[in-house]
Image (cartoon, rainbow, N blue to C red; front, top):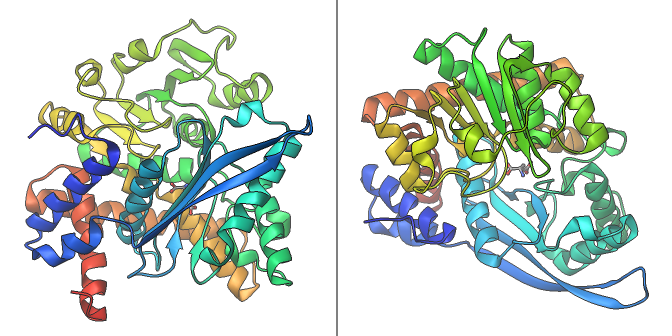
Amino acid sequence: MSTENLNVFEQVQVQIKEACDLLGLDNSYYEILKTPQRAMEVSIPVRMDDGSVKTFSGYRSQHNTANGPAKGGIRFHQDVTFDEVKTLSMWMTFKCAVIGLPYGGGKGGITVDPTKLSMGEKERLARGFVRKLGDFIGPEIDIPAPDVNTNPQIMAWMVDEYNAMRGYNNPGVITGKPVLIGGSLGRTEATGRGVVITTREACAALKIDLKGAKVAVHGYGNVGSFAGLYLHEMGSKVVAAFDLGGGAYHPDGMDATVLQDYVTKHRTVAGFPGSKTITADELFALDVDILVLAALENTITMENQHLVKAKVVAEGANGPVTTEAGKKMFERGIAILPDILANAGGVTVSYFEWVQNLQNYYWPLDEVNAKLERNMVNAFANVWKMANDKRVDMRTAAYLVGIRRVADAMKLYGWV
Ligand code: GLU
């Protein structure tokens, strides 16, 4: 059956069903996992700078809490839908389980183009969302974090609003906060760092030398730029980068440290001195060793998967390769590091942040990074072993590892 024309929500259901069947779980597990435990849709009226009131739609979904409170980011994007948020919350359940974090899966989003809002409007929107979420979130219930187009400042406003509702400080309600108010050192760069740790492990397993390896990065935001930077530091060559503003290509590799400064200043990689322009399709078709996909869902589909020549594809974003395109690429010998493994560094350091908040004791950066390294290396080893034992691709293997953990917890609780 082709899953290509299914929406992302239906696609993830197919993935879950396949994994449940491969694990030999009876249908009751799938019956529970196929849909979120609870999900909420709210309307958020915001006073705009011109005095008018505009209402935005917001969503929060808690997929499964067998392993702990729901955990996952909040995104601001014009294409956010309730189905997308539900799907993303399902991926979070399995992502947390693959890493072995004591969390279930959650996700939130607001349908808004944040580039059209002033700072003040953004702040009122963020606060309005938290007021509407009320008792739906909390350090023991559901812990939001940054995601696409949200950042530590937005998290700070959200925590402040939550604190005002409760009447006391609750740093553990949201992670990805600025360090000064309870954020963890290393959180901002954690997702990119995790992408590179798993990529390094995959390259070692596949006998690909990272030194001199050619890298292309699609989506040069928070995740993509740190992935590019760390790969550059490990001796790889970042030959191409692409973001909403356009692309930059240099066959000998670009200095990712200089590139990051350029992006901070110009808000795009396009026009990076010495580089040529490149389109997204041209970037996918480059003869590189590593392709990092760090933009949004459905970047690589059955339409364009044939372009990809990379040996390793790391999913820095959530769902950048469709299930079917991924299977086709696996048949072509391409190793895809699936999102629920490759980009789990962010939620892992979110977990460290939450632990630090709950115990009010803060760790130095080297401790955070050492713990992240250990978690990611272990998770990769588990997924790699599962892939070899069951002779499946790494995405299927990651689902098997993740669903097994959730299924075991559900069984112990007597849900099934
Ligand atoms: N938004 C990130 C993700 O998709 C991080 C979530 C978190 O830190 O809770 O994994």
